[in-house]
Image 1: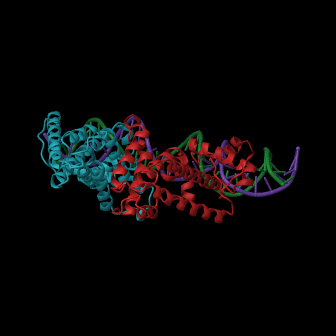
Image 2: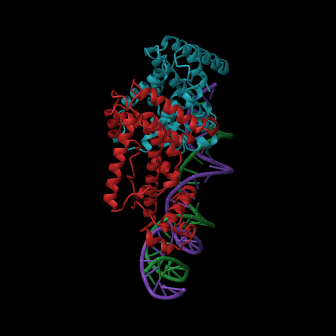
Length: 229
Length: 229
DNA sequence: CGATGACCAATTTTGCTCAACTGGTCATAT
DNA sequence: ATATGACCAGTTGAGCAAAATTGGTCATCG
């Protein structure tokens, strides 16, 4: 796991992502990834230990991107510090990243045997209860709501948002942005404090947590964090 | 499809339900159903045309039961006429019926090839937009919300409520009744009119719709409706 | 009569082989 | 130092035939 991958690694991960999403992990061969990235199969193993590790690093890199995108969406959103804004942007960032969506939903068609080899990859959780707790502490979220349960409901909504297509024909599903706004609206009514909530304080909490996370990963990887898109 | 099945038919459907839920449609044989119901395979075909028709009639019967259960839960619930009460009881009735849950979620492990033979079985919809519209008309639900989108969000929540176990380990899922109450609470805050909403009027709408539905099915089947549990 | 279970055609499963492919390695080349 | 692709052992999967099972029927029974 790295905070910064070099060009060759990035093009390998790009190629892998495209193929994994299109054909799934199992139907994609290391050779195809190598070819698509314009190098030989042997060279792949100079950068990654195994096929598994390609997927692992891909998910790690894309999670970084996802978090960064989310972070910037929130910063740019006036309601970004409230639960509704946080969550709305979770859904927006999620819809922009099929691989993160697949990982969150444990989509077997895409993740295939990778799921079996790395079983406890994430817990199907997008927003952590302790994060909600900190938002409550600064009046960005109602205090009379159980953070764990709230987090769970959000996981439910995100999961359904991504997977409802499995049970409902697409012509009966409202447009993505309409659904996102309606969900955000519902959250606003249900979770924002009566006085309107302190969005700026919420953003500050997020900044703190982001800084902590960056420090943690810099210590872990021994690399300096740097924005990447 | 019948509104009232005789004893033998009911015990066949009971046996089928137990086996379908335990082993799935494909892994359950007509012979097993017959044996479990205490009759021979040949006799099954005196009551039902085919295996498909067993599942079809089972779903029809269980849908009736589900609707009746839902209806009575709502009648007994002070908030039953509001969106929150309606929906809370949808989730309660749903958790009481694995086969209805499987049908709603298009669970291939249980429905198996039945899904392919009867493709457009339901639309993954539990509450219809026009029902919400009628609730709005009598002030049981806020009027500034799009009924179609609201219905869709409810489908999402019900789907996630039933399927979240696929992506989240059970020890990280709050207790069922806690989740149900939290969802109902959220709906209350988001969808109940400011003045508290007219729950009794909501119930009256439901009664009307129930009467219409009963009349429709009595005309369709030529049978008289009768409560069955 | 309603009910049975032997029976049937059709499908599915099983056990098997063999060729192709796969992830990963490494001697070799650049 | 970096990259290649032939190579290897292990796995997958297409193909096939035999065997078993299936949903559904019907002559027969009580």
